Structure formats: structure tokens, C-alpha cells
Amino acid sequence: EVQLVQSGAAVKKPGESLKISCKSSGHIFTSDWIAWVRHTPGKGLEWMGSIYPRDSDTRYSPSFQGQVTISADKSITTAYLQWSSLKASDTAMYYCARQDVRLGSYFFDYWGQGTLVTVSS
Amino acid sequence: DIQMTQSPSSLSASVGDRVTITCRASQSIRSYLNWYQQRPGIAPKLLIFATSNLQSGVPSRFSGSGSGTDFTLTISSLQPEDFATYYCQQSWSAQFTFGQGTRLEIK
Image (tube, rainbow over all chains, first blue to last red):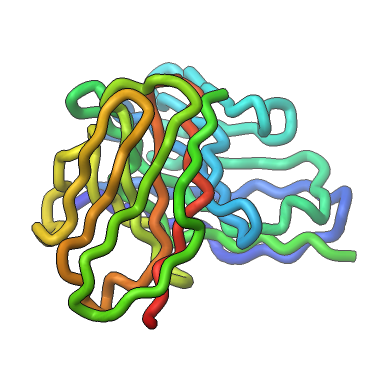
């Protein structure tokens, strides 16, 4: 079965960098897109971007382009989400998810357990 | 970006009720609309893909319909575990977007 296991919660100060991970198993990592989704109480779910690990083709939401970097390491079937300079507004729960397509519709069918990122001085 | 608007934002209902949640797209998305359920503290769960197709393992009391810009999620007979927040998500545009969510609460 497909499993996505994310790294643990992080508490950071504004301006610090962070890289969180999503270890994938149970599927062919290089054949599936992996997405990152942000969840906040105020805005709900927001798609941040997706990566195709086979060739590292990456798509970003305009809202997150330039704010985060999505990457993947095929050798260890792990996707990453990183920030170079965190802001308090980055405080949220972050999920990775497998992206699949059927009948032409792209959806997220397997999800990690979430990584809570808290940014506070 | 395609904007997705759900209504209502919150809803109170009782066990056994029939409930309908609406999702409207700012432009036609054909049938590329998916629905998710999220319980507090738990990752979202895919319920329906491509407007009306039930994901494996999802109870048949959940159903979806619509096309173009207007879509609905219906729960035919609410069960205690159905009280959660529901989100629609479009994939007509490569810039995927979610609705703001509908919180379903116990009356």
C-alpha cells in the first residue's frame, strides 16, 4: 500500500531556513507526481506545488512561486519542501500527497500525516 | 486562477439527515472536480474524483454530481463519523485550487 511518512514538527524563528521531508513507499516513486498542500484554519487547503521525481519537473502555485522550493531525491524516494527565510505567516500544517489522474481529473489520493511548522520569535 | 466557492461555509445537521454541499467554479471546469473530507487533526481523505466517481472504500451514502461550473456533494443519511470539513478541488487548470471548505457540524 502507498505510504507517505513526513518529518516531525518544527519550531523556527522568522528568517530561519527549513526543509521538511516526505518519504514515499508502496508505489513507483518516479511514476507519480507528489504534491505539497498547506492547511491553515483561516484559508483551509491550498495546493502549493507538485514535483515529478523522474525528471524533477516542478509546478508551483502562483501564490507560492518564489516562496518555497520543492525537490525530490529518487534514490531514497523522498520529496522535500524547503524555505530559505521563514515568516510568521508560514505557520501551518503541511501535507504531502500522491497525485493521480483518472478520467482526466487530477486528485490527491494518498496523504502524509502532516508536518506542523510553527514560526515564532 | 480558477476560484472555487463552496456554500454554505458551515452547516448544522443531525444523524440521518440528507445533506447537500455546493461548489461553484469561476469558469467551466468540465467534470474535473474532486471532493475531500477532513476531520480535525487528520489528513484529508479523497471521497470522489471526476465529479461523481466514488473512491475505493468510500461509503455509497456519498455521491457527487454536476458539470461545467456547478457541482454538488450529497450525503444521503448522515452518520456520526461524517461530521467534518469538506473541500472541493478543481483540476481543469494545472494550477489546482480548492474551495474554502464547508464545516458540517452536529445539530
